[in-house]
Length: 160
Image 1 (tube, helix red, strand yellow):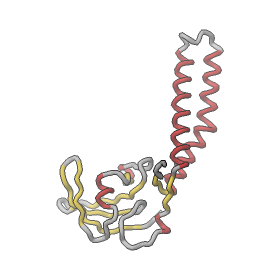
Image 2 (cartoon, helix red, strand yellow):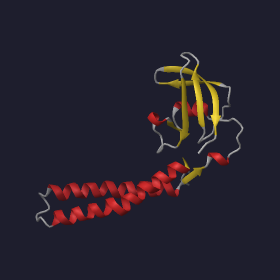
Image 3 (cartoon, one colour):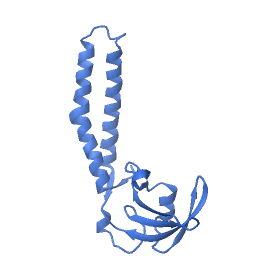
Image 4 (tube, rainbow, N blue to C red):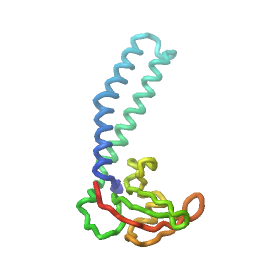
Protein backbone atom coordinates (compact mmCIF):
# COMPACT_ATOMS: atom_id res chain seq x y z
CA UNK A 1 0.00 0.00 0.00
CA UNK A 2 1.34 3.41 -0.98
CA UNK A 3 1.20 6.11 1.68
CA UNK A 4 -0.95 9.15 1.04
CA UNK A 5 0.98 12.34 0.30
CA UNK A 6 -0.38 15.29 2.31
CA UNK A 7 -0.75 18.58 0.45
CA UNK A 8 -2.79 21.74 0.64
CA UNK A 9 -5.38 22.67 -1.98
CA UNK A 10 -2.97 25.31 -3.29
CA UNK A 11 -0.19 22.72 -3.52
CA UNK A 12 -2.42 20.33 -5.45
CA UNK A 13 -3.41 23.10 -7.86
CA UNK A 14 0.26 23.98 -8.45
CA UNK A 15 1.16 20.36 -9.22
CA UNK A 16 -1.83 20.01 -11.58
CA UNK A 17 -0.79 23.22 -13.39
CA UNK A 18 2.80 21.97 -13.75
CA UNK A 19 1.56 18.59 -15.05
CA UNK A 20 -0.71 20.29 -17.59
CA UNK A 21 2.15 22.51 -18.80
CA UNK A 22 4.49 19.52 -19.16
CA UNK A 23 1.91 17.57 -21.16
CA UNK A 24 0.61 20.39 -23.34
CA UNK A 25 3.76 22.48 -23.91
CA UNK A 26 7.00 20.74 -22.91
CA UNK A 27 6.30 17.24 -24.25
CA UNK A 28 5.29 18.46 -27.76
CA UNK A 29 8.27 20.88 -27.84
CA UNK A 30 10.71 18.06 -27.02
CA UNK A 31 9.13 15.69 -29.56
CA UNK A 32 9.51 18.40 -32.21
CA UNK A 33 13.16 18.96 -31.21
CA UNK A 34 13.86 15.22 -31.54
CA UNK A 35 12.25 15.10 -34.98
CA UNK A 36 14.23 18.15 -36.09
CA UNK A 37 17.51 16.72 -34.79
CA UNK A 38 16.77 13.37 -36.48
CA UNK A 39 16.41 15.18 -39.78
CA UNK A 40 20.04 16.30 -39.47
CA UNK A 41 21.27 12.78 -40.16
CA UNK A 42 23.71 10.57 -38.25
CA UNK A 43 22.32 10.14 -34.72
CA UNK A 44 25.52 8.77 -33.16
CA UNK A 45 27.30 12.11 -33.33
CA UNK A 46 24.28 14.38 -33.21
CA UNK A 47 24.51 16.40 -29.97
CA UNK A 48 21.15 18.10 -30.57
CA UNK A 49 19.44 14.71 -30.81
CA UNK A 50 21.07 13.40 -27.61
CA UNK A 51 20.22 16.61 -25.72
CA UNK A 52 16.61 16.43 -26.88
CA UNK A 53 16.37 12.74 -25.85
CA UNK A 54 17.80 13.61 -22.43
CA UNK A 55 15.25 16.42 -22.07
CA UNK A 56 12.50 14.00 -23.09
CA UNK A 57 13.60 11.61 -20.33
CA UNK A 58 13.45 14.42 -17.79
CA UNK A 59 9.98 15.60 -18.95
CA UNK A 60 8.53 12.08 -19.00
CA UNK A 61 10.04 11.31 -15.58
CA UNK A 62 8.57 14.46 -14.08
CA UNK A 63 5.16 13.70 -15.62
CA UNK A 64 5.22 10.21 -14.02
CA UNK A 65 6.31 11.68 -10.68
CA UNK A 66 3.52 14.29 -10.69
CA UNK A 67 0.89 11.76 -11.74
CA UNK A 68 2.00 9.47 -8.91
CA UNK A 69 1.89 12.25 -6.32
CA UNK A 70 -1.52 13.49 -7.47
CA UNK A 71 -2.99 9.98 -7.53
CA UNK A 72 -1.82 9.46 -3.93
CA UNK A 73 -2.58 12.98 -2.70
CA UNK A 74 -4.39 13.57 0.55
CA UNK A 75 -5.58 17.13 -0.05
CA UNK A 76 -6.19 18.86 3.26
CA UNK A 77 -8.33 21.99 3.37
CA UNK A 78 -7.39 23.49 6.72
CA UNK A 79 -10.39 25.86 6.65
CA UNK A 80 -12.72 22.86 7.16
CA UNK A 81 -10.90 21.55 10.25
CA UNK A 82 -12.04 22.25 13.82
CA UNK A 83 -10.32 25.45 14.90
CA UNK A 84 -9.16 24.44 18.36
CA UNK A 85 -5.77 26.20 18.46
CA UNK A 86 -3.85 23.00 17.70
CA UNK A 87 -1.03 23.00 15.15
CA UNK A 88 -1.94 20.63 12.31
CA UNK A 89 -0.94 20.20 8.67
CA UNK A 90 -1.89 23.35 6.76
CA UNK A 91 -2.06 25.75 9.69
CA UNK A 92 -0.14 29.00 9.82
CA UNK A 93 1.82 29.34 13.05
CA UNK A 94 3.19 32.54 14.58
CA UNK A 95 6.24 31.83 16.74
CA UNK A 96 8.64 33.71 18.97
CA UNK A 97 12.19 32.56 19.64
CA UNK A 98 12.39 32.56 23.45
CA UNK A 99 16.09 33.50 23.41
CA UNK A 100 16.24 36.25 20.79
CA UNK A 101 12.63 37.48 20.86
CA UNK A 102 12.58 37.15 17.07
CA UNK A 103 9.11 36.49 15.68
CA UNK A 104 8.47 34.29 12.67
CA UNK A 105 5.46 32.92 10.83
CA UNK A 106 5.35 29.58 9.04
CA UNK A 107 2.68 27.64 7.21
CA UNK A 108 3.06 23.85 7.46
CA UNK A 109 2.73 22.33 3.99
CA UNK A 110 3.73 19.21 2.03
CA UNK A 111 7.28 18.63 0.85
CA UNK A 112 6.55 19.77 -2.73
CA UNK A 113 5.16 23.09 -1.51
CA UNK A 114 7.92 23.97 0.95
CA UNK A 115 9.65 27.31 0.35
CA UNK A 116 11.36 28.70 3.43
CA UNK A 117 11.74 32.16 1.87
CA UNK A 118 7.94 32.30 1.48
CA UNK A 119 7.39 31.03 5.03
CA UNK A 120 6.25 27.59 3.85
CA UNK A 121 7.87 24.72 5.76
CA UNK A 122 7.58 21.01 5.04
CA UNK A 123 5.60 18.90 7.48
CA UNK A 124 8.72 16.72 7.73
CA UNK A 125 11.04 19.58 8.77
CA UNK A 126 12.37 19.63 12.36
CA UNK A 127 10.38 22.77 13.23
CA UNK A 128 7.10 21.40 11.84
CA UNK A 129 7.57 18.01 13.51
CA UNK A 130 8.12 19.75 16.86
CA UNK A 131 5.03 21.95 16.39
CA UNK A 132 2.49 19.40 15.12
CA UNK A 133 -0.08 18.56 17.79
CA UNK A 134 0.95 21.44 20.06
CA UNK A 135 -1.33 24.34 21.02
CA UNK A 136 -1.30 28.11 21.12
CA UNK A 137 0.65 29.31 24.17
CA UNK A 138 2.91 26.24 24.39
CA UNK A 139 6.68 26.44 24.11
CA UNK A 140 8.40 23.75 22.09
CA UNK A 141 12.02 22.71 21.87
CA UNK A 142 13.26 22.31 18.31
CA UNK A 143 16.50 20.53 17.46
CA UNK A 144 18.04 22.29 14.46
CA UNK A 145 21.47 22.04 12.81
CA UNK A 146 22.70 24.99 14.94
CA UNK A 147 21.63 23.34 18.21
CA UNK A 148 18.34 23.80 20.04
CA UNK A 149 15.74 26.55 19.92
CA UNK A 150 12.86 27.22 22.26
CA UNK A 151 9.88 28.54 20.30
CA UNK A 152 6.67 29.85 21.81
CA UNK A 153 3.51 29.39 19.77
CA UNK A 154 1.89 32.84 19.72
CA UNK A 155 -0.99 32.05 17.36
CA UNK A 156 -2.36 29.26 15.18
CA UNK A 157 -4.40 30.30 12.13
CA UNK A 158 -6.56 28.05 9.95
CA UNK A 159 -6.44 29.95 6.67
CA UNK A 160 -6.40 28.87 3.03
